Length: 163
Image (cartoon, rainbow, N blue to C red):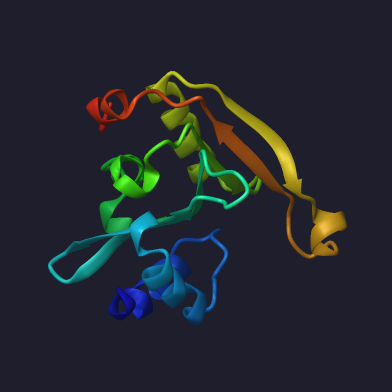
């Protein structure tokens, strides 16, 4: 919901090395992409945020845009649980692959997606998607496409929430 936008923007800013989107971008995600985004809240504080969508040209894929977990909620498998919850929603019906982009220096994201790959028994492949010089004019590190799949059935994914 749009009311979560400011808190989501603050959470993302506190989760380096995530790219900080504009507040407007976060509001669009909260509204236009509400079915493929998730917020975790405790006592009025947002502890987790995962945004994603199904690319129109690749409808069997689910693209994870950002995963942010507040320091107070780290080490509790919150990111894995948010992704599994998103993939269990009707908006993810028919998804066969999870995709995302990650820079080399984002060790927490690589650890998350490698752990999902292992938990699901699905291979993770990596290839350059947006290159530092060709796409970012040298001002942003290469974004690597991480692709996990084919994914197991929804029931199989949800049985392993915390392992």
